[in-house]
Length: 249
Ligand code: PGA
Image (cartoon, rainbow, N blue to C red; front, top):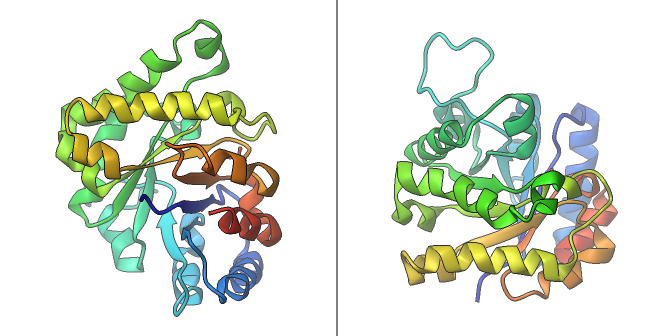
């Protein structure tokens, strides 16, 4: 049995006050226990505050990005070692917003994946197709190529200590969720692709779905055989919604 992950990607939202309020509401809401592994990904500036606030709870803190470099003259960047030093356990790599807006290629994403693992962080590798890619019938080709870049750079064994997230770009922040069947089809494809290389790793790897997940649709998505949780943007900023998603686990 793969344990469900409820992960909240806060993106560039929040403040000290919001971090305090949201995390204390989540802590209270999760006090009675949860079947999910619960992760939050605040912006860099609030990581330390978040790490302090989640102490004594089940919530773990991750970052939204890391540098490909170890250290040095990289103005504005954060290294994996710094994130680890701050108390982060996870880091997102290859989120579609970074691929699109920061021109991160799949090769750069693979370097970040490797650096995350080198510094003791669990990478959450995001893959997903745009609407035009889906409409052209290229969904599987696109996600396979995004995954292949990491396989080429790091090898299949590296997937053992990672999380995969399928996030169709057309479903992110649009309110247009993939149907559970659409999600399942791609999740099964990703798992089968890995299974051909290493069945054990493929079977234990958790594959999250992301794209307009909310309290109302989480149960149906998590009920699918190969959907092992959600990477949640907008709804993770609302404690009621996010707790509902945790409860769907
Ligand atoms: P959304 O974002 O839930 O707001 O669609 C998901 C994500 O980008 O991880």
